[in-house]
Amino acid sequence: MTAAAWEAVLADAADDARLAASGFVVVPLLTAEEVTAIRTNQAAQQAADDSGLVIDFTVEDRRTMQATRDLLTPALTHHLEQLLVDRKPVMATFIVKHPGPESRMALHCEPSFTRGPQPAYNVWIPLVDVSAESGNGALHLLPGSQHLPLGWVGYNTPLLFRRYERQLAERTVALNVRAGDAVVYDSRMLHWSEANAGPASRPAIALAAVPRSAELVHVLATGRRHRQLYAVDEPFFVDNHPGDVPRVLAERYPLLSEFDDLRTLDPEAVASVLGTSAVERPDTVVPEHVDVEGSQATLEPRTVVGAQLPSADVDHPASTFVAAMASGGPQMAWEQPGARLLPIEDDTIPLSHRAGLRSLGGAGANRLLVVDPGTKVVIEGHDHPIAVVAYDCPEVNTGLWCEAGVATLVPGEAIDLAAGQRTTIWNDGPGSAWIVLAERLPRRRLVERFRRR
Image (cartoon, rainbow, N blue to C red; front, side):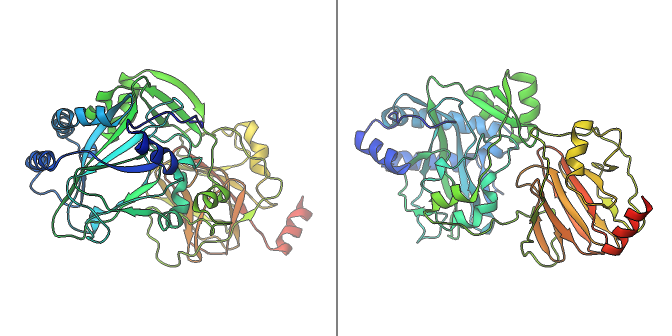
């Protein structure tokens, strides 16, 4: 994952120089006759009721990916050997955009395929002419984004660019590509494709090309920072549905290493890729399962001075125990098990974290709210202001919504809530979110509390 000297990727020196300079290149690959033959075979294997965006790799019945492999391996092997220098294809799949808005593909990059210094490269081959003008689902690339410090990308790893997605997508370049030509680009480069607004389906082939000597890997996020790196093989991408990956990795593949990935994406890195002096304030990523009924304005957080934050993932044993707040404090509700509300001095909280938790609150009756991955919590019924302060939480994927707007929860930052403000907090993982709910009592009540002591 570190920068490395350029090694030839393409056999043609001029094409390889263009690839090195811009991060992508468009080259001829398949003949018209070959395109027609592949299109015919692909159409024969697709389901009659397919709609929207269909990617063989994500189809639950793995016989689809196996049929795709058996079709594409003999059709592409010779061409790829002529195109690439000492590289082999993995995870070849058809991507079909059927007409309609559901066929749009969001901004993304590919997973980390190897742990060596040389990156993988995508090879994208449309089987019909594709262009922005025709509206049938043009591919958009963001040259330079392959250098963003996104860390390891794999199963359940936070997509660090998501808070800047709108700004990044606006600067991407749309490509016009003829049927059978290949777009070769760094797999770490951010890319997306438009919905197919044309009258007919838009099929394409996508695959990754990795150095032949490279060890194939897949990374699994088990916490905000913690990662497990597994050695995999080429059948891994064919035989296993993405939803089965955690189980399959643990059962069938060797664990190479465990480590913490501490990288974050700051505005300066994004501005550098966009070629600007600064970027707008990052957006809050609101997941589909959170119903935002009012404003989506971004709330202004404040930094907690003197915050003592953890340097490694925190965890808390699952429990149904819920502690009551002080009289007039917030009430909790959640749609499924997976949240605990605890006094900061609770015996189940390790001593090593209590000082840090205390550093985030004021003089009120503060509590720790632990929100497990996939859990959504509703706070309401508090008759005085409170502050929601993150101690540790999954990056990008933890946030809150209230009538005043939305916010991403960031460790060491506080979001102040007015009295009675109904608030939803979500955590989409990986890992638990540790959040301090700090009472912000009126000054008169603070004085009375100190006098009682």
